[in-house]
Amino acid sequence: MSPITQPTEFTVGIALDAAGWHPAAWREPDARPDALFTAPYWTELVRTAEAGGLDYVTIEDSLSVPGTGALDAAPASPRPDRVAGRLDALLTASWTAPQTRTIGLIPTVTVTHTEPFHVATALQTLDHVSEGRGGWQLRISPEPEAAAAFGRRPAPNVEAARVIAGDTDPGLDALLGEAAEAAAVARGLWTSWAADAEIRDAATGRFLDRDRVRHIGFAGEHFSVVGPSIVPRSPQGELPITVLSHSPRVHRFAATSADVVFITPDSESVRAGASRGASAAELVAQVRAAERAVDRPGLGLAPLRIVADLVVALDTAAPGETGAARLARLNALAGEPFESDARVVAGSAAEVTELIAAWRAAGVEGIRLLPLTLPGELGRIVADLLPALRARGLVSEQLDAAGAPPRSLRERFGLAPVPPRAHRTARTARTEETAA
Image (cartoon, rainbow, N blue to C red):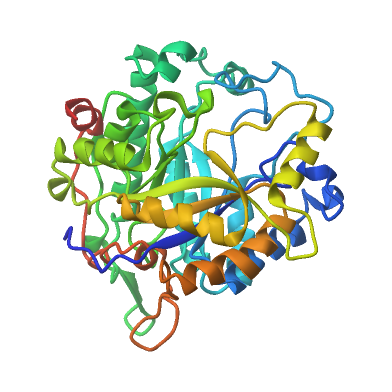
């Protein structure tokens, strides 16, 4: 598969989670806590993002109730004043796909405790129903609660303090090794059918050219998968795989397995792990160093797209509430200051634009905005921040040769199309990932 890429635009996406990223966001006057677990709520959010010209949405998910994770400072059981529970991100994306036209849809799907064959075919299905707009935010799960919920194996022995400090941790290494295999299995299954494998000739009675459907023959430390996929090749061939990284160790994993890596510059929170206090330029340099240690062209992968996460609280158009005042008010409701792994910025659209411009100059290729509240903050992003970014020349509406927004998510990220007959050969991802 060719690693050649298309010209890269600066992408802007939105990370969706419940009523917003602040734990008290569900108590906002314009929040809709009674609708958080309904299909129309999520459809409205994604349609608003699409109408505003955003490139993609990511949808959060996990295998444990929010606020109970092993690396989270929250109590072991959910607090009664916080939103608990989520809809399945992949199913939510699949629901919104036929009701949207251009925006990319990137659900979070965890590979720990799950089977890569099922994950891969479900994501292929998303790509089909979205007509080529599907993606995948790959996540691992060290949480004891998730292990107990599945009941298949004990929780991995991950030492949170070592992970946050960026030190080597055997438990994390094992989880990432398994995740690398899951990603390799998925890519193999996605390309196990040639694009023209389906003949569909009623006259001759031939629906399928079986010579164009191949077994992937994957054998690794964690998985042995013969394949092929039960789902025919989807429009993109391979969905873009995205990973959130807080440390050089996860940068190395992203370098072998992902197409897009989310980083967290300028965050002083302990939640940023080993990235705490690092600038955009420093994190970009770390990611590029991890890339240079890997033969990505040999793996059939283009250069990693580096996207920075940013929590935003925008000023309301005058006369109105400032973003700082809103953040302070929500903090008072929550009983504690809000803290995120990403930098939190409260201010005007012009001020946020200046920060994004500085990050772009440091080598960041896109921004993923984490709205403090939903739907309010999303409305302000669309009405105020995106026009400011366009006026500054930081982003432009992506158009194809026909003058329409690009259909595929790969195009949005500047990733080359996957050739119709490209096929991932069998390999052991664990060996490649460890060698990185």
